[in-house]
Image (cartoon, rainbow, N blue to C red; front, side, top):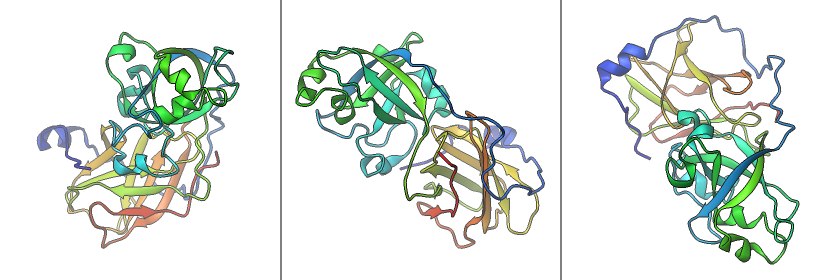
Length: 268
């Protein structure tokens, strides 16, 4: 994945502000909020790609080839802007279920937001899911997945669901193009909310948390420097404000395009 700033260096420097925080959180905390969506809401759904395919190759969230392998494989989906939230909705998980009892099962499919569908069915403020062919077909009763896909656009109901990546801890991918003066990160395998509302990093030699800027999709960056690792990373979820801090998760000899796995994750 080629990760470059959308703005000029001078523009990014203007809003990549450095905020100082005392390091007080070293493990997941919950601010008396829960990701709970007990009520099903109306929406529409379509599918794209090959009939039994995995959907996006990459996508507007920037997950790249990660969407082609388990646990994301065949569970990915593009959503309309109202759910994409300019990239803030990346990583969120939803349950989606179709309603026609003659062809739809009672089983909901769980999808992970990895892409945006900005036009067509997804325009004009509509709530719409554009699913992989495989995910769309899983809403059908046994043996009817092909017939369901032939329906095209379907009325569905959906609700938010906690993301679950069994056996996985949160990982931080260092995006291509990162240097000691421009560092860009992507969060992977976040249980629970799945989304990111803010990110900070802390250099080993400092007690200050430096605020990162949301650039595009699920990508965050900071300009400064020279930045010296190892880096601790603190993320706060968008949906419920839960916070997690991973100490020295990115080593001093970090390299672009590498992924570094923490020892922590949220509870789904």
